[in-house]
Image (cartoon, rainbow, N blue to C red; front, side, top):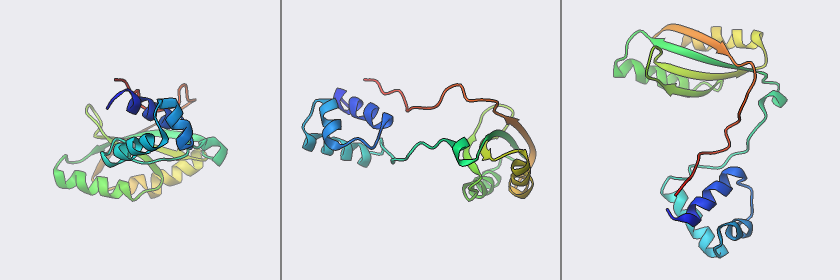
Length: 152
């Protein structure tokens, strides 16, 4: 990646709805070169997709929970069963395999504690191989993710 690719990645992370002409101008390349560079970044897997950033509270999802999950076994089969089940749950926004005390860290959004209780009972408690769950609730967001730092 050269300087122009880095500029394109930074610009796309800030606002992926920008026109090709605007992106080309920001990177100091022609629109056709800009298009080729973006397609190359997509083909190489550096750019994995495009999405709108959503304000969850404006959708009524005012509660963010972080749930630590410990499994009864760390065998490949147990972890695969758990991960397959989590992938199918729309209520789980993120799931990370962790080092440390917990095996996984999940992020869940809910309208309120009552809805989180339903998610906990009807979804999380039914995940295979779980021996312990610990939930923590976000009080307020301090910083919102705006993209990865891209440097040359």
